[in-house]
Length: 215
Image (cartoon, rainbow, N blue to C red; front, side, top):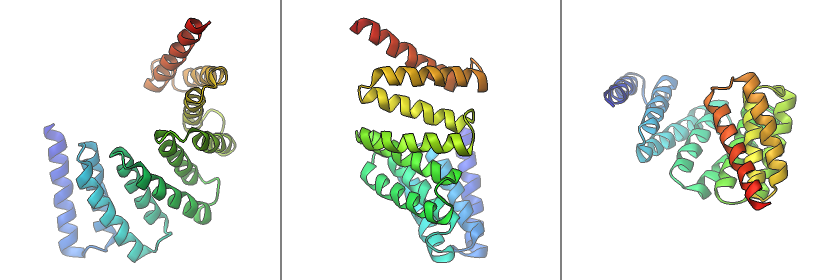
Protein backbone atom coordinates (compact mmCIF):
# COMPACT_ATOMS: atom_id res chain seq x y z
CA UNK A 1 0.00 0.00 0.00
CA UNK A 2 2.83 2.33 0.97
CA UNK A 3 4.68 1.75 -2.29
CA UNK A 4 1.59 2.77 -4.30
CA UNK A 5 1.29 5.95 -2.25
CA UNK A 6 5.01 6.64 -2.72
CA UNK A 7 4.72 6.07 -6.47
CA UNK A 8 1.76 8.42 -6.72
CA UNK A 9 3.57 11.09 -4.69
CA UNK A 10 6.65 10.79 -6.92
CA UNK A 11 4.59 11.07 -10.10
CA UNK A 12 2.71 14.03 -8.65
CA UNK A 13 6.02 15.80 -7.88
CA UNK A 14 7.28 15.16 -11.42
CA UNK A 15 4.02 16.46 -12.88
CA UNK A 16 3.99 19.60 -10.69
CA UNK A 17 7.64 20.30 -11.49
CA UNK A 18 7.00 19.92 -15.24
CA UNK A 19 3.87 22.06 -14.99
CA UNK A 20 5.74 24.87 -13.21
CA UNK A 21 8.80 24.82 -15.47
CA UNK A 22 7.34 23.86 -18.85
CA UNK A 23 3.62 24.66 -18.72
CA UNK A 24 0.52 22.49 -19.12
CA UNK A 25 0.84 21.96 -22.87
CA UNK A 26 4.43 20.70 -22.95
CA UNK A 27 4.66 17.03 -23.95
CA UNK A 28 6.66 16.16 -20.79
CA UNK A 29 3.91 17.66 -18.61
CA UNK A 30 1.20 15.78 -20.50
CA UNK A 31 3.15 12.51 -20.26
CA UNK A 32 3.69 12.96 -16.51
CA UNK A 33 -0.02 13.73 -16.09
CA UNK A 34 -0.84 10.57 -18.04
CA UNK A 35 1.48 8.53 -15.80
CA UNK A 36 -0.17 9.94 -12.68
CA UNK A 37 -3.61 9.02 -14.07
CA UNK A 38 -2.40 5.45 -14.65
CA UNK A 39 -1.20 5.14 -11.04
CA UNK A 40 -4.52 6.54 -9.76
CA UNK A 41 -6.33 3.93 -11.85
CA UNK A 42 -4.17 1.16 -10.39
CA UNK A 43 -5.15 2.43 -6.92
CA UNK A 44 -8.84 2.38 -7.85
CA UNK A 45 -9.15 6.18 -7.71
CA UNK A 46 -11.10 6.24 -10.95
CA UNK A 47 -12.82 9.61 -10.54
CA UNK A 48 -9.49 11.39 -10.11
CA UNK A 49 -7.99 9.39 -12.98
CA UNK A 50 -10.89 10.38 -15.24
CA UNK A 51 -10.30 14.08 -14.53
CA UNK A 52 -6.60 13.78 -15.40
CA UNK A 53 -7.27 11.66 -18.50
CA UNK A 54 -9.71 14.34 -19.69
CA UNK A 55 -7.18 17.14 -19.12
CA UNK A 56 -4.46 15.25 -21.02
CA UNK A 57 -6.85 14.55 -23.88
CA UNK A 58 -7.95 18.18 -24.20
CA UNK A 59 -4.34 19.43 -24.02
CA UNK A 60 -3.16 16.95 -26.66
CA UNK A 61 -6.06 17.90 -28.95
CA UNK A 62 -4.98 21.55 -28.76
CA UNK A 63 -1.24 20.95 -29.13
CA UNK A 64 -1.00 17.88 -31.37
CA UNK A 65 -4.37 17.86 -33.13
CA UNK A 66 -7.43 15.62 -32.73
CA UNK A 67 -6.06 12.69 -34.75
CA UNK A 68 -2.43 12.58 -33.62
CA UNK A 69 -1.54 9.04 -32.40
CA UNK A 70 -0.79 10.37 -28.87
CA UNK A 71 -4.17 12.15 -28.78
CA UNK A 72 -5.88 8.90 -29.77
CA UNK A 73 -3.95 7.06 -27.04
CA UNK A 74 -5.29 9.59 -24.52
CA UNK A 75 -8.81 9.11 -25.86
CA UNK A 76 -8.34 5.35 -25.52
CA UNK A 77 -7.12 5.77 -21.92
CA UNK A 78 -10.15 7.89 -21.01
CA UNK A 79 -12.50 5.34 -22.58
CA UNK A 80 -10.88 2.63 -20.44
CA UNK A 81 -11.34 4.69 -17.27
CA UNK A 82 -14.99 5.32 -18.14
CA UNK A 83 -15.51 1.61 -18.76
CA UNK A 84 -14.00 0.71 -15.38
CA UNK A 85 -16.53 3.04 -13.75
CA UNK A 86 -19.43 1.42 -15.57
CA UNK A 87 -20.03 4.47 -17.78
CA UNK A 88 -20.51 2.15 -20.72
CA UNK A 89 -22.48 4.44 -23.04
CA UNK A 90 -19.79 7.14 -22.83
CA UNK A 91 -17.04 4.54 -23.19
CA UNK A 92 -18.71 3.05 -26.29
CA UNK A 93 -18.98 6.47 -27.92
CA UNK A 94 -15.32 7.29 -27.22
CA UNK A 95 -14.06 3.85 -28.28
CA UNK A 96 -15.97 4.22 -31.56
CA UNK A 97 -14.30 7.60 -32.19
CA UNK A 98 -10.85 6.16 -31.46
CA UNK A 99 -11.47 3.19 -33.73
CA UNK A 100 -12.65 5.29 -36.67
CA UNK A 101 -9.74 7.75 -36.26
CA UNK A 102 -7.14 4.98 -35.98
CA UNK A 103 -8.52 3.35 -39.13
CA UNK A 104 -7.95 6.63 -40.97
CA UNK A 105 -4.59 7.53 -39.42
CA UNK A 106 -2.92 4.15 -38.88
CA UNK A 107 -4.84 1.86 -41.23
CA UNK A 108 -7.53 -0.78 -40.60
CA UNK A 109 -5.12 -3.57 -39.62
CA UNK A 110 -2.56 -1.66 -37.53
CA UNK A 111 -2.16 -3.38 -34.11
CA UNK A 112 -3.42 -0.23 -32.31
CA UNK A 113 -6.51 -0.16 -34.55
CA UNK A 114 -7.18 -3.80 -33.72
CA UNK A 115 -6.76 -3.02 -30.01
CA UNK A 116 -9.40 -0.29 -30.39
CA UNK A 117 -11.72 -2.72 -32.14
CA UNK A 118 -11.18 -5.18 -29.28
CA UNK A 119 -11.91 -2.46 -26.69
CA UNK A 120 -15.12 -1.47 -28.45
CA UNK A 121 -16.20 -5.12 -28.62
CA UNK A 122 -15.58 -5.42 -24.87
CA UNK A 123 -17.72 -2.33 -24.19
CA UNK A 124 -20.52 -3.74 -26.36
CA UNK A 125 -20.25 -7.12 -24.60
CA UNK A 126 -20.58 -5.50 -21.18
CA UNK A 127 -23.79 -3.82 -22.36
CA UNK A 128 -25.23 -7.13 -23.54
CA UNK A 129 -24.89 -6.24 -27.24
CA UNK A 130 -23.53 -9.69 -28.01
CA UNK A 131 -24.32 -9.80 -31.75
CA UNK A 132 -22.37 -6.58 -32.34
CA UNK A 133 -19.55 -7.78 -30.06
CA UNK A 134 -19.32 -11.11 -31.90
CA UNK A 135 -19.08 -9.39 -35.28
CA UNK A 136 -16.22 -7.15 -34.12
CA UNK A 137 -14.40 -9.93 -32.26
CA UNK A 138 -14.49 -12.13 -35.37
CA UNK A 139 -12.98 -9.29 -37.42
CA UNK A 140 -10.26 -8.70 -34.79
CA UNK A 141 -9.41 -12.40 -34.61
CA UNK A 142 -9.08 -12.82 -38.38
CA UNK A 143 -7.02 -9.62 -38.71
CA UNK A 144 -4.71 -10.53 -35.81
CA UNK A 145 -4.10 -13.94 -37.36
CA UNK A 146 -3.00 -12.21 -40.56
CA UNK A 147 -1.03 -9.36 -38.97
CA UNK A 148 0.44 -10.91 -35.81
CA UNK A 149 0.25 -14.61 -36.59
CA UNK A 150 -1.95 -17.42 -35.21
CA UNK A 151 0.19 -17.95 -32.09
CA UNK A 152 0.66 -14.35 -30.96
CA UNK A 153 -0.68 -13.78 -27.40
CA UNK A 154 -3.03 -11.03 -28.67
CA UNK A 155 -4.47 -13.44 -31.25
CA UNK A 156 -5.06 -15.98 -28.47
CA UNK A 157 -6.79 -13.27 -26.41
CA UNK A 158 -9.11 -12.67 -29.37
CA UNK A 159 -9.88 -16.40 -29.54
CA UNK A 160 -10.70 -16.41 -25.82
CA UNK A 161 -12.93 -13.32 -26.13
CA UNK A 162 -14.86 -14.70 -29.09
CA UNK A 163 -15.36 -18.07 -27.39
CA UNK A 164 -16.79 -16.31 -24.33
CA UNK A 165 -19.16 -14.24 -26.47
CA UNK A 166 -20.32 -17.29 -28.45
CA UNK A 167 -21.11 -19.10 -25.20
CA UNK A 168 -23.03 -16.08 -23.91
CA UNK A 169 -25.10 -16.14 -27.11
CA UNK A 170 -25.98 -19.79 -26.54
CA UNK A 171 -23.72 -21.11 -29.30
CA UNK A 172 -22.17 -23.54 -26.84
CA UNK A 173 -20.75 -26.12 -29.23
CA UNK A 174 -18.78 -23.52 -31.21
CA UNK A 175 -17.68 -21.87 -27.94
CA UNK A 176 -16.33 -25.13 -26.52
CA UNK A 177 -14.51 -25.92 -29.77
CA UNK A 178 -12.87 -22.48 -29.90
CA UNK A 179 -11.97 -22.49 -26.20
CA UNK A 180 -10.42 -25.96 -26.63
CA UNK A 181 -8.20 -24.52 -29.40
CA UNK A 182 -7.38 -21.55 -27.14
CA UNK A 183 -6.31 -23.83 -24.27
CA UNK A 184 -4.08 -25.93 -26.56
CA UNK A 185 -2.45 -22.84 -28.08
CA UNK A 186 -1.97 -21.11 -24.73
CA UNK A 187 -0.38 -24.23 -23.27
CA UNK A 188 2.02 -24.24 -26.21
CA UNK A 189 2.80 -20.50 -26.24
CA UNK A 190 2.44 -19.44 -22.59
CA UNK A 191 2.85 -22.71 -20.69
CA UNK A 192 0.50 -24.77 -18.51
CA UNK A 193 0.90 -22.59 -15.42
CA UNK A 194 0.31 -19.17 -16.99
CA UNK A 195 -2.76 -17.39 -15.51
CA UNK A 196 -4.30 -16.98 -18.99
CA UNK A 197 -3.93 -20.71 -19.67
CA UNK A 198 -5.48 -21.53 -16.29
CA UNK A 199 -8.40 -19.16 -16.91
CA UNK A 200 -9.08 -20.68 -20.33
CA UNK A 201 -8.96 -24.19 -18.87
CA UNK A 202 -11.29 -23.19 -16.03
CA UNK A 203 -13.98 -21.92 -18.42
CA UNK A 204 -13.60 -24.89 -20.75
CA UNK A 205 -14.04 -27.37 -17.89
CA UNK A 206 -16.99 -25.37 -16.55
CA UNK A 207 -18.72 -25.33 -19.94
CA UNK A 208 -18.12 -29.05 -20.52
CA UNK A 209 -19.55 -29.86 -17.08
CA UNK A 210 -22.64 -27.77 -17.86
CA UNK A 211 -23.06 -29.55 -21.18
CA UNK A 212 -22.94 -32.97 -19.48
CA UNK A 213 -25.57 -31.91 -16.93
CA UNK A 214 -27.84 -30.76 -19.76
CA UNK A 215 -27.60 -34.07 -21.66
